[in-house]
Amino acid sequence: MQVIEETRRLQERADRVRGEGRTIGLVPTMGALHEGHLSLVDAARSKADEVWVTIFVNPTQFGPDEDLDRYPRPRDADLRLCRARGVDLVFAPDASFYAGGHETWVDVADLTRPLCGAGRPGHFRGVTTVVTKLFLAAKPHVAVFGEKDFQQLAALRRMARDLNFDVEVVGAPIVREPDGVALSSRNLLLRSDARAQAPALVRSLDVAERLVRDGMRSREEILARVRAELARADLGCVEYAELREPEGLAPAPDLLSGPTLLALAVHFPASAGEGATVRLIDNRVLYATNPSQETPR
Ligand code: AMP
Image (cartoon, rainbow, N blue to C red; front, side, top):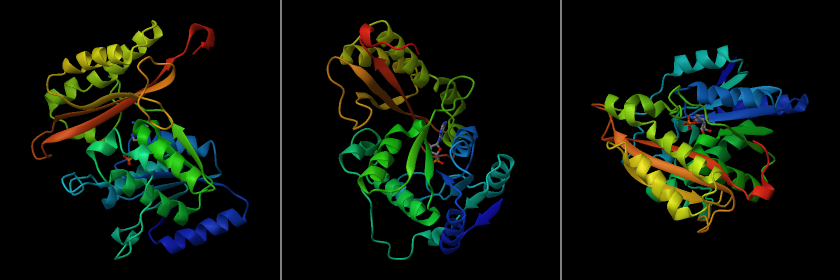
């Protein structure tokens, strides 16, 4: 497995691989790798000849009060995990990846304003800009992102389409802990009593899925049941619980029809020394089809 730190060298390597007629599958990450990230490696492997992972804690997607300094950076363990999973190349640039005086931004407009964008202004602009830089550095044919960050995936798909990036943006399913909590490096920062309540997110998704399967279509009734389920986790503070149309993320209609995204963000107390709260997100697409449209799932 090759480890490259300079952008220029990565571009040269990409040109060589492309010149040999081989395809590149890219998995952008901020490191602190877990099985969720590694599932993206597997997905990239099924789509491309070479799998390249990028590890870069991107400062431009953190707000001033967020956990940039505390974000874990276990570089050696990350490299070991990549090697064991058969990754061909890791791109791990240092802070100079953003040249001094960086002034250029890629902003996907409306799609990044609601949900996580409302509570984290500037976050998605940081994501789309760094992914643009990574696409131009690694020149991948395919790039894989997790559905855990559903809005991020939607924004990156839209960016690739709007800017004619010749990159197939692929989504991969959420990988979960045995108790259903979506894997995240931030789970380790939860106070232990809060960690015990974290399955409230996935339980709420399950409740909503069951209600829709049983025929409930009222957006407000479903959200009321979701909020009631979340409220059982009394340490949690709900940032949002919303139903939206999955592609453009417009608000869902009063009566659901077709696929509908249920997206959640909840803050829980952090363990000592890890800041005030840890923000967990989760989501699921609910299929509010009419009986005549139903396909077996
Ligand atoms: P991050 O390092 O947190 O920026 O995440 C890098 C990539 O891994 C993103 O595309 C995430 O959506 C994806 N990812 C993170 N956690 C999970 C998970 N539990 N399941 C699937 N993908 C994930």
